[in-house]
Length: 192
Image (spheres, rainbow, N blue to C red):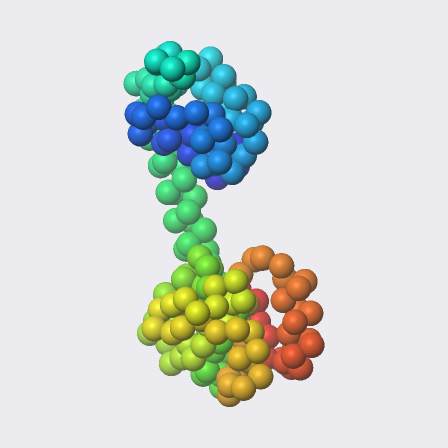
């Protein structure tokens, strides 16, 4: 789904909550600039997806119109559809990777990263003889992932494992540098 459509959907969802919200609050919630929120709202009003009414204390309220509700439904469907296609593609790639790893005799896996990609990788591991023995993620250290507590990256130097699977899209360059510095052999590293 295009970023513009995703932000439009998020804005329509926020408006649908039907509570007084400032553009600054919307900007913070959507993690976009105040000017971007203003431009999006003007576009939504122009298309007839929402109305702007004044409420006491010099505030405005955004109201979703019936056509705005229909657009929100359409964008929600588009989002779910594209997410599902991504999920199917990712699962297929992972099944192929897991088959390859099994054929090479690998069984003990560590994930580097505990976000959405790790969730898909963990679900895809179900029914295989592969075992997730650890998850490392410096930004989430101490939290839980599946049945494990997320560990610091230094853990890869003390655990016996076959493959370190990179399950994040963030900072690949930094991750690869940390892997090299830790002395992890390149043959043990795979990317999702």
